[in-house]
Image (cartoon, rainbow, N blue to C red; front, top):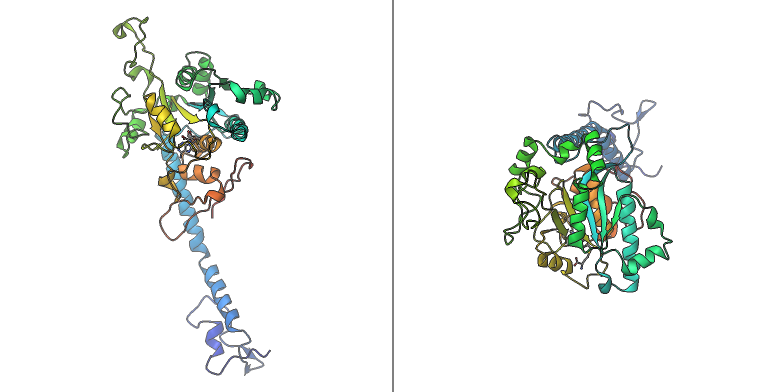
Length: 397
Ligand code: SAH
């Protein structure tokens, strides 16, 4: 080899550090009792050093991963224990569990969309259905203002496949009324009796009517409700976001045909409705049992800024945005597609972790990165465009 080292570089110390007792590399290269020049190039030596260091740090890295894993498990267990998350599904059953949360897609935006946007919207609704259908925890799903061109497309080009969809309410009513109907179903006013039984069977009654501890946990957090309450709306419910129906205050608009509130043993609770919009000043921190979340069924490439927000405000319904800014380095005002918003909520139900939910759903082209401390760095978002398949879990480390 012509890669001989210069005199000044002693080969003995380059290959191996005498102070390193763990090494079994000989301290000098000796052949037949004669000292030989070091046969390794500087780059090779450097590389080797790095490799050795990497090997030496293996136990520390394993320990770091173990700690992280344990912390994550503990956080999840705490969330389950406090009732903020439904209990984990029994490992034996792969059947989705119905939870008392509703997702309503407000499809009253036909006039705002161009033909191809309407087509895209129809595809997004289909995607919402299939995501919810195959979810570990399935919410109640509804479509408001069902009809018009979207229905035509579902009937025609899409061959009426939606007729076989299960667990979705196609409601011709506008979103406020539709939300009330869905709420009633969710609370067991109608066909929801079955749901109630299923919830009990699955131990979800705890989540439906959480214990004192879980209320305490909620109250102790910075934002007592999942939302900061809108200051301007006096007639909104107080900030206990998880409230058994019997504890709910009187409906703000009493039914004139009903007897006076004092004689009603169990007053019908006011539907808890939240319109999701990236323009909201309020941020969602959890999903709350017995709440209907409205998603604006519109694809508009941001032409109609603030449209959904205004719609909700005019109806006096609280709004909230997803906590993107709290978890990802991307803009908190990021406007997502209908199916991504829906899937994020579904993934939250599954993991109790918004960060994880966002990373699984938000497409890579949006450059989503998880906010974290330490030099561990940032975690890249997985692929997850509208037409992508499911992402692999366990992308960590
Ligand atoms: N210009 C429309 C944008 C629609 S995006 C508007 O006025 O909102 C489609 C729907 O997805 C929105 O109506 C909203 O319900 C939901 N959405 C999108 N991004 C969101 C976010 N960051 N937080 C909460 N909801 C969001």
